[in-house]
Image (cartoon, one colour):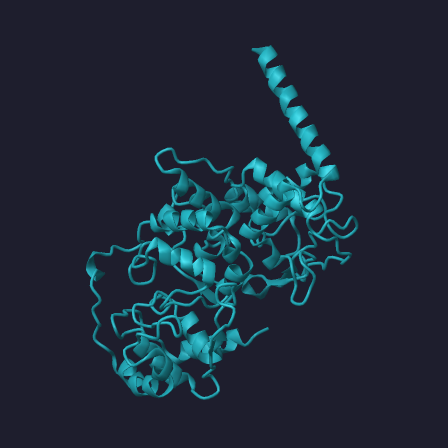
Length: 425
């Protein structure tokens, strides 16, 4: 037995030495580096580690912390040896990405989704390390210190947070599911870190659950407000989830940013642009299969058929305003124009309990995400300068209670609050 263990340890040591030897002389075109580049796309690393108009992975992107306590700035993760991670060993890289402990900063703020990245398998971590060391251009850009007042900037309490809430390990395939389902679960729970936005958080800003099979698993990907947008419910609910969607529609949305009657809005646009449109069809189909397997948060039996609820007076007042300002594009019955203007009828974004996305789009307008499949984005005009808070609330209430939609009414006070927060830098 002891001989077998020694043989295994020697084999592992030789494997690690071979990997380190490869890492020392790899080139950007090596298969391991290219695989790491693909995995970095899946993890959307560029989104947080690239400032506006900045160089890729050089950091500096400001991230607002909750309750207005300050900002943190993403670090430089290029292989620059002074400002980046060029001197990091694989063990240090792995410790930072999967366990939130940087050799330079110590415990990381959980703005870094390391509780999800803990699921990443060792061979994928080695490919990511090869990519960041040999496939990324080094950038000499000094890291910005966090903008948090003392004593809130002390990092030692993060060790307690980590001990309490970041206990996930490497993904373990579910033997009762198919290989395709397990691949989708691995990407969603790990590299894709979808729960970081789409799962509600608790009083200590922790994700209430990290996977559908864990405690409170029914809350996984059930929707949450983050960064002043509402990250959608990705479970099987018919009204505000993916219950009416086919797997093919999920794939199309992640690949192109739109379906025939739905369009990505908000911060998810960056995810599609930087990450999901670059995934291969096999991985996108696996993600769709996994998402479609998630049970609804609320029972669907009562809403299998669209039923327009009784409108309030406020919602009825929005009808003429909708006809004047919205029907030209979204059509009189909210059906939209296929592949041009999204439908509002039975639209999951319109039906979310939180109306912030609907209100933000009305106030400030926006553009559809630009992808390789849809290179010409469509624009929605902003109505915030034309309509007051009462009028916006009336249109939103009308839309959210028409054509089978069944979401709560919107008050002028909610519009005023969202108008204010959405205008903040």
